[in-house]
Length: 322
Ligand code: NAD
Ligand code: SER
Image: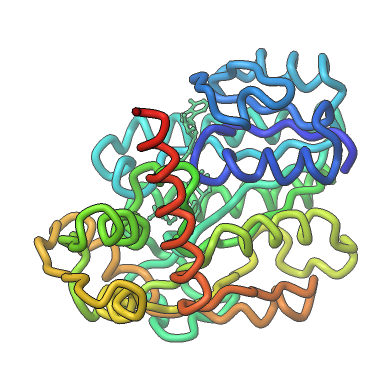
């Protein structure tokens, strides 16, 4: 990878991925794109273009203009938003991916696009979900993710496009807010712990889902994209995870730092049903074996870092407001 275009670059992942990639490959070699513009470092610290991923012509033009060799395709609608607007989600999630695949095919580019634990459904084995298993999701997001995995496989076998991907668990981070997913509670809980000392969770106690701290997710993307292609047996959809947790466990860890933190519940039936259709925990041994995936943050280490970073962020905001 020498020159990379990122779509959906101002979202939860892109905001941090663009900065990491600019640090490794050079700031002029990472073109950030999104349907909107903001003042984040991802938008201002290097080349930025507005791009609606459903506009395939413009995507191709930009890839040619910047002579990129890789697309990292992040633009998407996440699980809860997709459930509220299923047809729009199909159009953005599948239409955008088809355009990215076609651009990659036309110009001979590498393509990274993430799948998700959302690709699994109620009939999937729930614990230590295997790499290869039943994928019959019951959400529009999941249908998009399974279709995307298959479409990327198709473009690789049929046209030789170097497509790669992982099934991300819920990602936890402090820079950009999450974009409307089922796992968002695991980000909100940290902000509310610092700002209010309490959190009302929309996901019920005892509901386990896989999670990962953002630095591990970013490292995984770079590692997979730089991996020896000959070793990638499941190139488009590697299970990866760092921890399997439920709300009470996160709260308990937060109380090691903020002893008075209180957690209560107002369960959202839509997001709860999505969460219950997903695995409790997934098995990522294939990613570990094939390209050396390894997570560095467990719940304890992540909680310490999240709370510290959010406290600093709030302090900085307070100073700016004075
Ligand atoms: P996000 O919702 O935070 O960001 C998505 C970005 O895409 C936003 O900046 C939005 O403006 C942009 N976008 C939306 N529609 C667009 C369009 N038509 N054209 C161009 N840009 C558009 O999402 P994220 O968390 O950064 O996720 C990125 C990818 O990773 C998605 O495919 C998502 O399914 C996947 N993923 C994320 C998580 C997670 O926990 N964040 C977990 C598993 C998989
Ligand atoms: N965090 C994502 C979501 O909840 C998982 O893909 O939608």
